[in-house]
Structure formats: C-alpha cells, structure tokens
Length: 347
Ligand SMILES: *Cc1c(COP(=O)(O)O)cnc(C)c1O
Image (cartoon, rainbow, N blue to C red):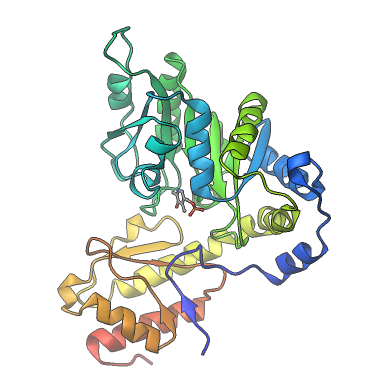
C-alpha cells in the first residue's frame, strides 16, 4: 500500500533528480576545503539569502545552536519567543553548547513585540546583569504562520540601536517567502544570520544552511568542526541540497494550496475546530476534541487506510503537506476523516 505521510515535511524522500545529482556529484574532503559541490551549494545559498557567506551544516538544530555559539559568549542572554523551536524543541542545547541564558518573551502567534524587546534589553551597566547577546526570530514560525516583514523591520531597528545581532531560525524560510510572495533575501535583510533547512519541504535528505557575514561564517566553520560537524565527502549531500534550492523552492505554493484545501475540507466536518486564517504554509492545525473521537485511535485507523499522522500534541493535531502528497491524496484524507468521524462516504 502507498503511504500518505502527513506527520511532517521532514519525511520527504529525495526526488529522482536529487538521486541522480547525488550519484554524479563531484566530491572531495570538505574539511580540507576540497569539495566543489559543497562550495557551490554554500555560494548559491549565500546569494539566495543575500549574505556574504554560508555554511552547510548537518541539521537545523545544529545551525541554530552554532549561531548562538558564535554570536554569544557564555552567560549572555538571548531574547526570543517562548514558543520558539530553540526554546521548545532543541533539548535545552543553548545552555549546554553556547552556555547562554534564554530569556523568553510572550509570542503573539509567533511575533514578538518590539517594545517588549526594547524593554528587556540590558542597557545599564550593572554588575548583576548578563549582557544581551542576541535576539532570535523564527520565520516561518513552527505554529504554521508567517511573521510580517513590518514586525521584523521594527525589531531590526531596535537591535541596530543597541548593537545586538539578530539570528533568524528560518527552517521554513522559503515557505515564508512563498507566502509573502517575496524573495528570501527580503526577509533575511532584517537579520545578521539565518539558518534554513534543506531537508524539510525542499526534499533534500540531509542538511541545513547557516548564512551570515564572512567573519561570522569563518568563526562558524571552526565552531562546526568543534561540534563534530566537519564532514568529509559531503558533496553527495550538498548535491541534493543544490537541487532543493534550484528547483524545489519554486513549487512550495502547491504544498500551501494543498494544506489550505485540507483545512477547508476538514473544517466542514462537525467536531473539527480549525482556523483557516492560520494556514499560511503547508501545515494544518486543528482541535477535534468536540468530535468525541480518541485521537490515538485516529492514528491507528488512519494507518490502516495508508495514512500516517502524528498523535495530538497538547490536544492539537497537526497535518503537514509536502511534495509527496498530492491534491488527490488530500481529498482521500478528508474522505477518510469524514468516514471515521461521521461514518459516511462522500461522492
Ligand atoms: C525543524 C526545525 C528546526 C530544526 O531542524 P532539524 O533539522 O530538525 O534539527 C529548527 N527550527 C524550526 C522552526 C524547525 O521547524
């Protein structure tokens, strides 16, 4: 049975073109600086986000944590949203690797209040205070929404005023760009460094990019080695990453349209609570507690029908569309849901 996998966009398999590119990739020892494919990827990536240089790193978490490690010194304070990936889903790494203190601000659906940021920056020289070392933003946010450019610009103004760098967790940067109908660099112009994933909706099997100034990336390269992320013939992976950046960023709209369709159809099923305005990307969040159907059982029943989904997290279900999920698949998923919750078929 063919499986429709809606657990995440990280489950995406490489495309045929990626497999071909990986097979043929020209490689070398990248720790010696000998891998031409990695170099090409890094140059292309830097250009896409309008930064001087970029670095291929093993994962998104690696890229974010490396950014914290390079921007900050131990004991610094990092300002970021309380629902950000760095706070919620990176195993507390910031305290282990960079040795920084994360000071969380109230996230307003992913956006931070510029005034609150300004108020939280440690300005006075006080022997008791840590230094504010960094501000982290997340766009697209893992809540499925895109942060407005106005919000980023306002935060950028404040950061500039106090000489504090901004790092962007842009795991789904190109999804955000797609939603904003903007180029990625129109988003990243408001930040000093950015991490984005090649291995999510862009279908590359492994890897992320960290980009920033030349000096920043030079330091990050050494930091990457320290953390065990100096890879050898990684051009095999970079080759797939190049296809991701050359081809896959232009088709994300399709995933977004499929997610919206999924959301629209699911919202018609009694017992499913869902906000269509919150569907900016490839992710659909909903609450089905009113349907009176156990969500763990739903996971099992869906699997029997060839659909993989994750169980609810804090009572909320999340379905994610991707390259390998078609419009027909979406309609089949909706049909299956309707059948399970209402016990009926649609024509
Ligand atoms: C997935 C994700 C990451 C981490 O990427 P990994 O490759 O899974 O380590 C970081 N930030 C956000 C917002 C993400 O969605």
